[in-house]
Structures are given as C-alpha cells and as structure tokens.
Length: 327
Image 1 (cartoon, rainbow, N blue to C red):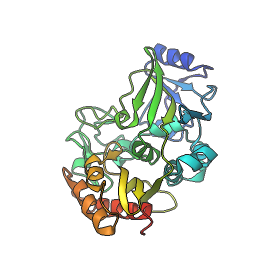
Image 2: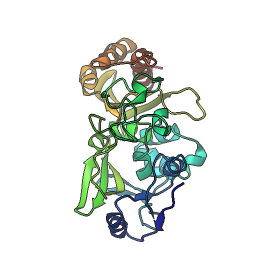
Image 3: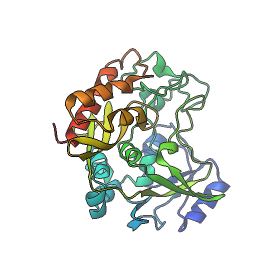
C-alpha cells in the first residue's frame, strides 16, 4: 500500500477544504470498500480525509419525509424506527446487502460511492477503462456473467453493485452534497451515471464535493413494497439481478407503481415505461409478466450473461407479485 497523509476534520467545510488542498486525496468513512481497493493497489490516494469526526450520523424527520446523515451506518439505517415504519423498502434493500459485520461499518454516503465489483477492475494486471482510462475493457470479451444488459458502452460494461441505491431510486430520494461552490441536492436517479466515454466517473459529483445526507420524500402508507435480490449465495453475494418495487393498489387496480432494478446497469435502472404500462390495470401474474417483458427494450447481453434477459423480467414479475400479496 502506498504511503498517504491522514487528516480528521471536525466540520464538512474543513473536510472539503482539506480535499481541495490535495485533489489526489479521498474521503474515508467506514472504509469497507476503499481500504480493500488500496490494499489491492486499485487506488492510491495521497491523503485520506477521515470523516468520522463530522456530525453527519443522525436520522431525523425533515420536510414531511426523512433525512439520513451520510455517516449513519447501514445497520443503523435499516433498523431505525422511522425507516421501518415509513420506508420499509429501504430497510429490506439494506438487509439484503453485504454481511452484518459490513453493515455495522458501511455508511450511507459510502454505500452510494462503492465501486463496481467487476473482476477486471480489481485485477491491476488487466486492462480496465474504469481504473485506467484508455486501456480497454477486458470484460467485453472476457468472463462477463455479472455484467450489464442496459446502458453499457464499448468502454465499460460493469454494473453498480448497490442494493440501497436501488431502493432509493424507487423512492425518488435526493442526495445532499456540499462543496467549494456551496450545497446542492442531486436526485438519486441523476446521481450515478452511465459509462459512456468516461467510465472512470461513477457519479455526477463535482470535484471535492462531499455527501452530507440522503433525503427521502414523504410517501403514502398505502404503498406495498418488495425488494427481491437474486444472487449466487443468499448469505452474502452481489446481485445478479434485483428489483425494488412499490405498489399502490385500489382494490385490485394498480393506482401507482414505482420500479428500480439492480445488477443490470452502471446505475440503478428505472423503468418508467413499465410503470406506465401497469398503472390502471388489475394486478395479476399475467399483467405483471406482460409489463415486465417490456423492460427488455434496448437490452444487450454478452456471451456469459445472456441468462439475464430471462432472469430480469422474471425477477421483476415475482417482485410485483410479492408486493401485491399474490406470491
């Protein structure tokens, strides 16, 4: 591991200023992803700015919704009474991710910034445009079983590994950030970006910006939710495909539905066309399956992940069935 400077500021402003002085530095929260990347020499920051001293570890009601501080651990967020009562989808998604030990360390802000688990990104002997821009994408013709079927480019076909972010996308959350130019709110659906020609950029954060919180809007208690994660090991593995579903039923009629998918793209993948196709229809397996099949428009599989073309709509159908109480 390369030597690095270390600082522990006590305010968000001081943290931003510290990074401004050393642009090759990185913020450190729980470290469950960053430290591994440093050990494997995937990243080598010149300075670590420890955020542990910042007052960003509170969960509180805000503007009729909920605000979760960036340093709230995944375990704390999943178990918080306000989350369990008003945002059960978030709790389900967090508990589907990682292991209890990791959830005790991983933070809300850090979770949003975790890097892809593409094996070629982790292997410094292999070309990877995300790790070293311009070097190529080994996954294109390599072992790409875990990779994207939506939104990829010829520069990168990696997927976002998150669970929490998929649920946040279904709930239209906002990411609160602060930086040298002040504070702003980024819709979660705009926070992560597709690879395009710059797969090294995972998010739309500006240089030196710091996540301070995630804000959830008020949601009707009538929504029924499901988070379904298909993976190789139930105990602890990243999603092959996941689906976050919110369903509002009026009798058997679908009044509203919100959907986000994980394991299929470089960011949580939303399906507004499928949502439109479902609104106003009567909930049933056939209706759900018919709408889910529409999600494959624009999908592109690679040699080893063609099974996702069947797995993704089947996962969404079952998640909708669970939310409707039909499974």
